[in-house]
Length: 84
Figure: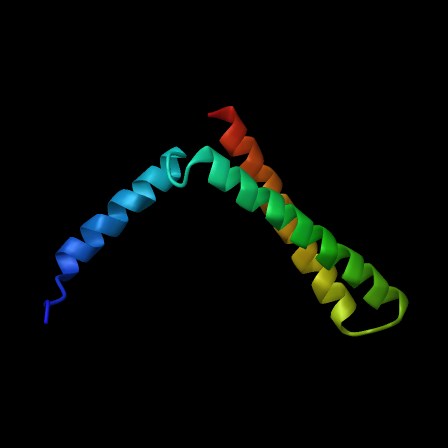
C-alpha cells in the first residue's frame, strides 16, 4: 500500500491553486460553462425566493439572498475570465 506523503500532496494542490488564481485552470471554456450554469441556478433561487416571499414562506428571503450571492459571484467570475 502506498504511503501518503503530505508534502507531495500539498505541493500538488498548491500548484493547482496557483493556476486557478492565474485563470489557467480550469480552462476558460470549462470555467465559463460552470459560471453560466451557476447563473441559471442563481436565477432559479431568486425566482423561488420571490415566490416564497409572496406566499409568506420562511425560505423566501434565504433563497433570494442565496440566489443574489450566486449571481453576483458568477458575474464577477465571467468578467474575470473574459478579461484574461
